[in-house]
Length: 235
Image (cartoon, rainbow, N blue to C red; front, side, top):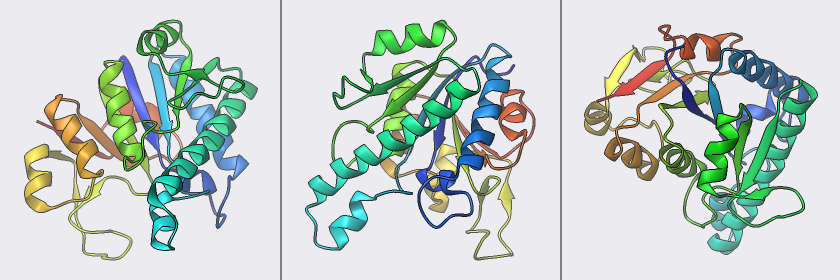
């Protein structure tokens, strides 16, 4: 495989499937089976999941709720999603460890970098929950931070679209897709790949990003095999 250790970033919305909110167990099972297939190749995988299918702190702030309180509620939402994925992976025979940035001893280990790396070396899927543990930071930033800490080769950003386009392809049918693009070109064109904090972290630490359609069966394995799937953000 082209990559040995990867971090997969999933949005909370991706777990909804065709639902309006919550978790679609068929979609969850699809993800678990694809991750299991990848692990059989010897790839080490860590995962960060958002919480937008349950709660978004920034939306709560727009409604008058304290932003910090809302962000902590969003972190708890990521833990719900992380536990759901952990359960589905274990149903499929995959060994996992859930590490939380906020102490929750009854349901998750605290995040300790060396332990996370050791779990990966033993072939376990490591799920990082509760974001960075701090308000005002997104799960994109958590994904970038954890990927750098565990020395991942690449961040795989699984989305509903098959890469990065000149405009939103769901709104603009004339949008064209990039197969590869540099970090500087993303800055210059003002494209929305990740939030700027997360994107800058990747740029400064020379960590490439691949944006791809996670919902299309087999794409995850193709990406890791080096096939031309999605968009590669490189240097």
